[in-house]
Image 1 (tube, rainbow, N blue to C red):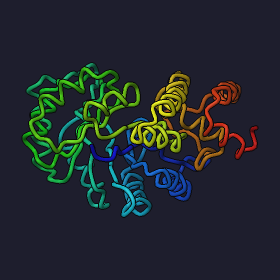
Image 2 (image 1 turned 135 degrees about the vertical axis):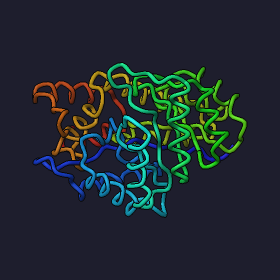
Image 3 (image 1 turned 30 degrees about the vertical axis):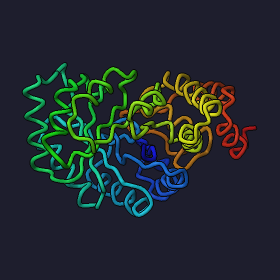
Length: 311
């Protein structure tokens, strides 16, 4: 088994006046580089990509390449799209910035729209025929539906430039196992979410994808390192720390918990907060969030809190 990689959907940082904060973004990306965690630039949730202008998207991709290229693979997400042409046009922004790989979801499930298998197959055929660049497919249920494993497997086998499938949001190993059995190629990497990930590593998963790295990059790296060196006791403790953290912050979905934690812990870009349509929660809620965060007893959180003057 090769080395297990870690990939994260990273936050996009803003100034207090809600402009793109390029200096904070570089500093934030450097935290990922130091822990050898690759990033998905401009993700729809964590990265607030649908709140970015085209020029800002272009800058996010270019800055990500400047900071990470030559040290880690540079992945790009694109904002949620309604049709194949939008996906093609937005992916070219990322490719022009020299990213290594582009991630594609299906079309967004707007107004309750759920594509049929034929519609989704045509969508991916159109996108992947036009964009002959290394690509990742993401059957993410946050789009409003979960594509069948057979549809995703067919795309992997038809298009050799599909290099991986990102299974973020698909907790449990049933989807992973069915997809692994259906894909005929043996060079498609499967990236799995944190819950149950060590079991899926045993079954052949080659990457972990988790946006917890925006706050806890060292802990995620420690988890994978301990798995790879066979330290079951240490891995179990670190895994429990991560799950406890994830269980706590999921009460504030989307980018909210990340920007709250970044502000509380004085991480790069934390002062800028969220961009509309998101709003930062009231100060008293942020304070309650901070108290709960610091009560989790996660070593990296304690170190961050001490550095921020909170402990």
